[in-house]
Image 1 (tube, rainbow, N blue to C red):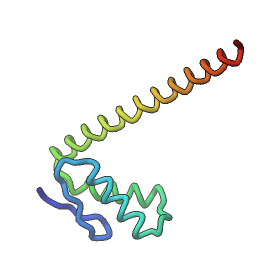
Image 2 (spheres, helix red, strand yellow):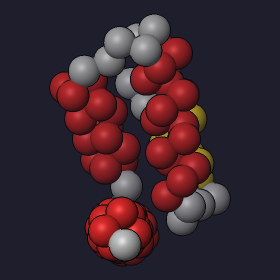
Image 3 (spheres, rainbow, N blue to C red):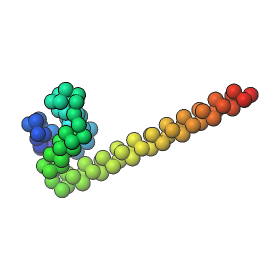
Image 4 (tube, rainbow, N blue to C red):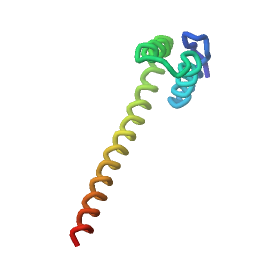
Length: 96
């Protein structure tokens, strides 16, 4: 496993675990900006990470990111559907 550096100098382990990268980014951004970081700050740090990765690492992390985003999207859709069902059930119960 190798490490790459954020602009703060913090090490980010590149071990194939997207959540490790996200957690490190979050900790560094919140610590260095006192919870007041911008889109630009976040984008700059992400670009810093991407630029230091090999093509193979980028492919691996993109694949994991797409999978994670798909699951999140799927969960949001399911939650919206469940909320709609609950609302319809409540309306039917009130009518009776």
